[in-house]
Length: 430
Length: 172
Ligand code: FES
Ligand SMILES: [Fe+2]
Image (cartoon, rainbow over all chains, first blue to last red; front, side):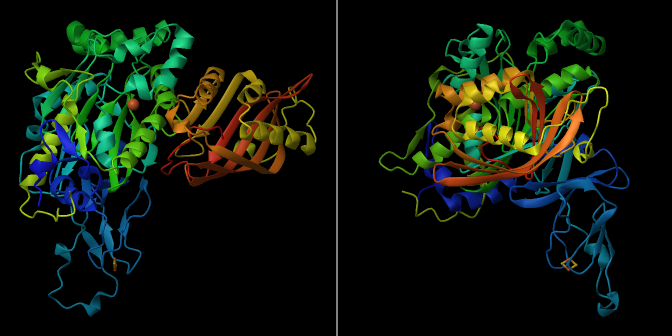
């Protein structure tokens, strides 16, 4: 029997971690049901009764604002006999009425009514039969995470100073200090493991190969070669922020090829207005920092990435099927033209019809296929492993073509998978 | 949505409405060019003020504040076909084999000097052992030129535009 330490070593992982259904089942318990999982932005549900269907791992939950204005994460499962009480993916409701036998729940989950209640005796206690809430729900600057465990570190402890600083930058790029995540969602699906998307979101080694067709178009149109932004000489870095999280910093990088950066030239008016608004709110120094940074590129283990101008949620379906939701972020208080430009830049590259994301997704499918080949079961993650440095922020730092972020993911994965008392059957793994 | 539901006459700008047969011929020709992967000829159907728009999530999404699946102006169209022709777009290695069926064609009216045509698209796209079926309502806005009709706007309202979509890297 192999242990997770055998499967996930410091600089390589065994292919079965992408292929074995038993490992996937365990991930749903040991990772998704055990840690903080991103659920949504509170601005998606501004009014009482607003809701979105979401999932924690494969467990369906309702992300809803109750009548008192509190954000709730409720299990979408009737406490009577298990029917999913909410079917609409989004909307506004007064409460949730189960379609099976008519039990009615309030927006805060309380059980309000049970039809024909005379056939229950006095031991039947409605007050214990509300929709089950996630054990913990915490919010950092509007970003809502839930944990199905009542014990464990707080959200802030789990994220750590490095992640919190990135989330501050993300939110502060709005002149109002608030994000608008109501521009809709791109949903994609691929026949591959969920971790392929997680790893790829922090991979500076692939763009010049996978995105060649897009870069060729940029070069033909502008005369600038975007490939200089993704070589081993590029002055851009990845940081291991701990607990599986990582960030990507382009500071110092010429950004002519970046479409998602709102600060690039797009007509003087809206950009100047935006820059002035940031300076006015944050002062000269922080305003300049935010403008130079342009966008946040951050991965929070296990299910959310902030990249370009969108929030990317990873939704595992099965060991070889994954859905990915891309939610464009508009900056509240920014000129409308700038926000519209963010949308156009996003959809030009991302989403199922973009010039970039479909090619990433195609690679996930091909990797899932290729991993079935035997001979050498290992996936190598050694790139830059002996060249990591200490970054100015105190975190381990690598060059963007290094595999430092992937190593960070797998270290956290192994820690969490080993932490559980019950080991899955791994005999099938060779 | 409702703006395309019935004949709309803009008296000042109204071009003479073509017969349905002429419009059908144009749409069938467009579809045949896409299926034959003659993208240069397809691009030549478009006017410079092109808009190829595939809404996402809601049919009545406002593109200024809502994401689209596709919102290509002329430049975007050029980039899109360059990817299909260049051989390096991984999602189109191999290229999807597409079969467009255009039905239920109605000449809806004229607006802003353009002829508005509604139709239904049924599209089968084959790639790597899998056939994807896509369907939805289309609205074409055409301009009458001396040498025939030209495409100004093409909207495709996919019936599953709020669901997960695997690969839309071909032309609808
Ligand atoms: S399952 Fe919900 S009321 Fe019976
Ligand atoms: Fe990519």
